[in-house]
Image (cartoon, rainbow, N blue to C red; front, side, top):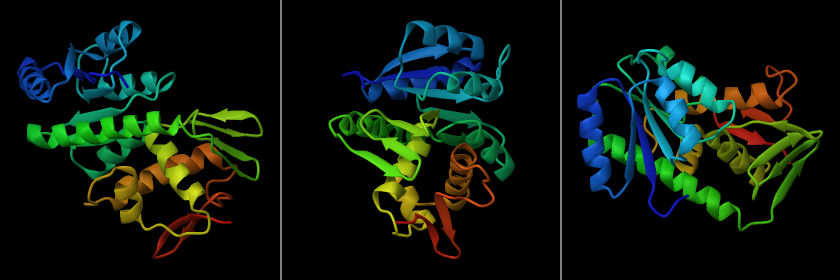
Amino acid sequence: MQSTPVVLIADDEAEIRDVLHVYLRNEGYMVLEAENGLEVLQTLEQEKPDVIIMDVMMPQMDGITTCIKIREHSNIPIIILSAKETQLDKITGLSIGADDYVTKPFHPLELMARVKVQLRRHSDKKDDQKSTDILRIGELMIDIPQHEVSIQDRQIKLTPLEFSILKLLASHRGQVFSVDRIYESVWKEPASSSEQTVMVHIRNLREKLEVDPRHPKYIKTVWGVGYKIEK
């Protein structure tokens, strides 16, 4: 992560961009702005922000489509903003690779706290690079310093949150982690309505790692308790 964190705001409402710009600058961050998804992709060709705050409903290219395109080549943390607040909308946002989902209207200070969480996770990734740990579980290999996962030499693309969850479970094989504990360990904030969020990421992990996600080989469900990777 750069010495001064860079945050990219993508929203077609100038008023929202202006408000967030002030709050982010007050936190000491550098701020980039975009009005739509196409501008986000163009910006990423020139700049390397540490976090993206992106609205769903934008002209020319919406936030969901943009998130999908970013995930084709980058694991940069993405916080989705949306006026849609149903569980299905949130699940959709997380399923396509977003790291967090904030509904409008929101308090800017809450969003600043979520930005700090993503930056802290980004910093943790940097710390991991000092490690030489490589975890092996059967055909699954987790290269912690490189943040890479492979199965039989086939690279598996994971989001930063998915990698953090997998690393947590793989580093404590045989230990059952509750949903709340996973959330608090990975998101590094108190668990609040965390069940759906964690379940979505577990489901995404299984779809990427398992031959048959309905009968997982790696991430096991302990009904009524949580999740684990067996010894």
